Amino acid sequence: MECKDILTEQCVAVARKRLLLHCCCAPCASYVLELLVPQYECTAFFYNPNIEPKEEHDKRKKELERLLTRNTLLNEVVVYPFIAEYENDRFHNTVMSISDEEEGGVRCMLCFDLRLRRTAALAVEGEYDAFATTLTVSPHKKAELINEVGIRIADEYNIKYIISDYKKQGGYNRSVELAKRYDIYRQDYCGCLQLKRTATD
Image 1 (tube, helix red, strand yellow):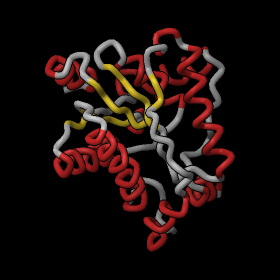
Image 2 (cartoon, helix red, strand yellow):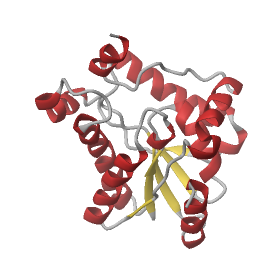
Image 3 (cartoon, one colour):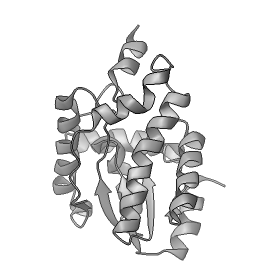
């Protein structure tokens, strides 16, 4: 079953219910929100302690906020009021034992877990109907790994997780198109400097 078929099936059951969407960056969020806003009451949640340095983290957060003001379709989307400190130390404490792993392995799964676990906890606290993430729009991320983490956390917190692979059916290309249309900054690495160095070696 294709991604949009899965979303359609799930959205029928939770039409216009409240969704807390973990957003990794504005370019990825652009397409995912375009897809989900007609079907969900979306709240964007930026929690990415893996992004380094702090200046890069803050720039990406600001770009997400700017996207929501520039795209008229997204005017109803709000940024989650929870303002997290820059918890980069927490990220490093989580992955330090496997810091030399390449992208796509256990290191990334721990990072996904860190971000989605915070999202799920706040979704429960805020009485949202479901949570999801924009991470699967990236061609560098394995949707099956992200969904595995999301499903496990959803079971722990007793809340619905929206399974996705947003890169399919032109999703990634659409995100690139929207980023250009709204003049949104597109970064050239996921977040952590270790993997940035690995990618450029």
